[in-house]
Image (cartoon, rainbow, N blue to C red; front, top):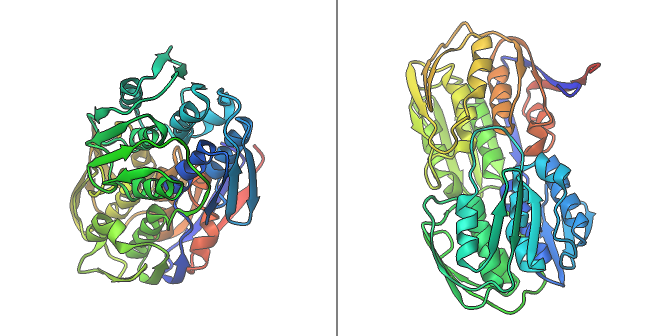
Length: 421
């Protein structure tokens, strides 16, 4: 544990409004795209989170010039070093975005396998298979990854699974490759659309983003641009989950309801009303949860990044639900922490049965082991009477800007404390 914890005295309704920050999972690849051009690339509404800090440090280590002015981050200059820092790569999974960016910019890349949250196997074969089809030579010894390419060329690439990271890496490479590329069965997430639109603003020729088939006509160079990632749909979903569980009336600004259709549907019930208007949601809840099963799957279905938060709510539901995790094979670590609070849960492989308890849950000392799991523990603590302490909040800081201040503004009794480590 890192010497900090989030202290929560639960049982309060949540009232008011919040505006979500720029989407972490869109900002990071947009920043990586900055080394694809000699000109200046500016990304707006970059959140103050540790993953963004790590990405800017990683870009600077490759030789790019990176400056931050408030929420605007500017990247200029192609990479001069093809080796990515082991320390920074181990700190976040999103360092994998540097694979395509460095290969296109420097012609080679040498990097340790990325780290981040321990939520199960996340194989790189989809990335590497696509790069090899475009002419790259790849070598992986189990701990280190090396890729080189004299010249990347277009190719027709069928992806066995719609991997977000692989789609983004291949988009960056295809934009500067010689000839045409077609990506089939690619990811459709809003973050993919944000990257594609960003690359097009830089001069790339891309069509089909947001569908399962994306076509790219390679260009000789990309230019500078000013890009925006859009609001973070997972942060918005986390607030939606908390309000639906705790009860209250809150408005969430800065996110498109169209990007959250499956999440909104999962939380809507006779106890929870969700109104949509433009780029905001209004959530009005009685503070009760209807038992409802869910299966995680690639967009546009229910996102794995919302599974722990939904799991937290189902612990307090009016019946029995089943949560199936099909994206990652190790994403139920939070289940044992919910059990400390009195939750009745049965986990078998990638499926969890939750026997909801509308009463009887209690505060507890909880240990976060990943980003979204940590957010789920906090949501459960916001509902539970008594004090809970959530340790390892540095995981939460990877994707939420000042998590406790956001919920404090809605009336929660939540604060961060340091303790001797």
